[in-house]
Structure formats: structure tokens, C-alpha cells
Image: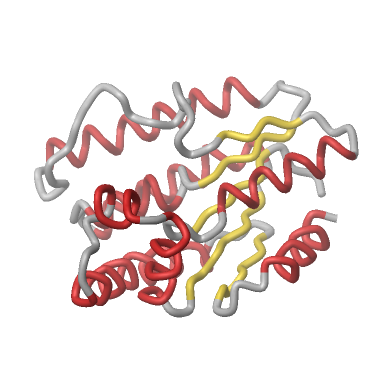
Length: 212
């Protein structure tokens, strides 16, 4: 597949990092130069380090964020367009940019405008997308927390009771539904994996077929 950018996206804990490492290993086996950007790696080229935000109902915060995102994505593409490698990027188009803006209550029309700008900027790298859609959001949060343990469940996510998990399911279902509508509209090659039964071997085979 003729691309310089493989995007992997979806909700927290959906398997993005594991998929990114898997694809990088496959490309290495084929002797295809590649660079995987883990969502949490230090000095990430698309992370905003120089400001904390309170709410995007504040127009100044919303406009600053949008302008900064546009700047970071332009710089990223300019830095990678001439590289003889495939870039693998998790989270930073949808979960950590569009989903974040939605959670921070940015006006939806502003989000859609920002989305179009990001898509136009990234088009120079002929991107393709692998997107994990969680069929049962609450169940997925319970599964993630069981796997990752108490430190992740309570300290990082603040989930203690059944009520907490139910509310998290509702909150992230709204986020996912908004983002997924944008995913479906983006006219690039994409593989949408509707994750209900955690059939990871099947999903990996589908990814291999998709990437060719």
C-alpha cells in the first residue's frame, strides 16, 4: 500500500499500542524503514507541552488550541514528507485531538473545522487508518481496568464502583459516537475493527490483509 503514514486510533485501551508495535515489527521483517510514535513517548511531535487547558467553552482557549494543533501537524508533515520511511502514529488524530476537544466541550462546528484542516495537512503523506470501535464501551473499560490493575483503574482513571464504570461507559460512548461519525466521512483507505469479542488473532490477520 502506497502510504507514508499509518494511523491507529480508537478509545483508550483499545489495542492501539499493541497494534503499532505489531505493524512496526512486520515492516522490519520486510526491511521497510519505519518509525512508530507511541502515544506516551517523550518529546512527542504532536503533543502540546506549553499550555494546560480548563475548558474549550472559553473561545480564547479553543482558538489557541486549534491554531497550535494546526502548527504541530504542519511541522510534523514537513519533517516527514521527505523521509524514506513509513510513520506509524497512534491516537493523535482522533483520541488525543478530536476526542479531547469534544471532551473539553469545544463547539462541534469548530471541531469539524479543525478536523478538515488536519485531514488536509495529512493528505500529503497519503494516510491510511486502522480504527478500533468498541461495541460495548462500559465492558471495554471494565476489561482494560482488570488487565491494567488498581493503579490504572483507581489512581489514573478514578474508577472505584459499578456506578463509576457505568458513567465512564456513557461518557466515552458519546465521545466515540462523535468521533466515529468523522472517521466514516474521511475519504482515505481505512480498516474499521468493531471490537466486541477481543479476537486479536483475527484482527491481526485483517490488518495484514489490509496493509497488503
